[in-house]
Image (cartoon, rainbow, N blue to C red; front, side, top):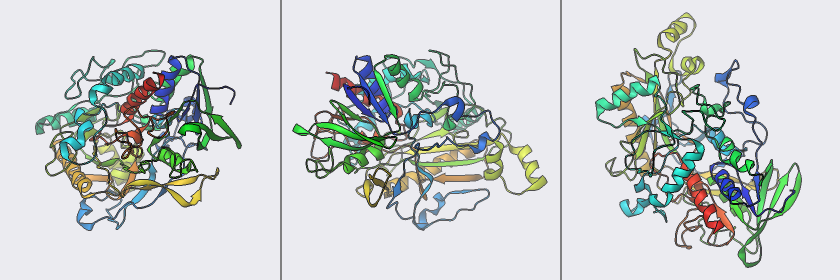
Length: 550
């Protein structure tokens, strides 16, 4: 594709973007292969146009991968209190979990899923790195919080993370690069309720500028982060790591470039990758290869690249590629708070409670969870969602109810820990392939007894917070019990010290291939107790690139 690169990077999300920034800053010529398109914010994110509320994040051709679903588990009627419903649709407890309309919500494009993410910028709690040592379940990381702390700080500085002055257990070597955003009316209302319960409630670290810098404006609090940011204040990979890497003149970007196979050469090194772009197949040499395609597509590509040199798949000498899959365990509850106004305004997920995040936070359960103010993130920031999801009736009665209640919606989201289970994994479909002939990935994800107990605790805490905030009845609930909906997935190429039980070492380098690094959430030995992963992915990617440069 025009150059003889020093390194090839597959995928341009949080991990791939951080890698190319580090490598180009060190003077390497880098070829970035991105399967999806480059988005144009002015064209693709028309948030000021009529009908904005009915638009999700855009899905132009080539921006979504086809995903299949296998075993998602049964739904025990005894857990039916977790069933999804809203004011217009009563709960209908199913017998089997199904994938929601979005399923695994992953964006193919220049910037990856950071283009559509809310922008929470969390560091993992230090205890998350020692899960097995502390609980006897799950797995420990082959590194600790102190190993990532300076890399967290470096990533935060480039992205422009705004956060609180306090640190808590996630100690810091310096303050956040930017002051925290003002909390929305909904977050302030929930904060008073949390204080009454004796729970902590703080500004949520956000990858959105609270002060203009580097040609990017401060956030205007439109509340539409998940639909794409037209201004560039949200710290997605395209306007942060990738923009800085392109400025070096050392980055060549190939969008619409679908990698179909990794080729193992002499000595076990990855000698090249097969790529299809615009219908044309090409084989590209890889002196150094970073695979950053996410916790579904990365194991898919490794398994699909099985050959005589790697009969079980590339980097799969341990047999662990695709295993240890962890989904997003989540539930969101909403209701109406009489007297509250303007809850539709503000930055999504702008406040967080870590009350149940670490330690023995939930009796009898391994792992914890966090709570966030979620009115905007749940999409309750417009009249269409409010009227169709939170209210009943029609005609003049519905109009009157809209006038009386719009702006009083409150939503609380809980996101929790997932302990790996042998049934939850990524496999290749034996029957279906994509247009390039590569087998499609199949997600198998089963909720364990631990996950179900934790999910009940998450729903209970959300209900308590809403009740303390003056919400009478919960009028909407949706979560992981009956639908698989995952924005964050982890663990399918676990890192570790032992090559017999992990795919990479502590720096993300494959045990089986000296020039292959992985830099995405597939590395995670544990999911964390509700922390959003993008900042940790970026920190791990910087660590991997630094190792490759030594």
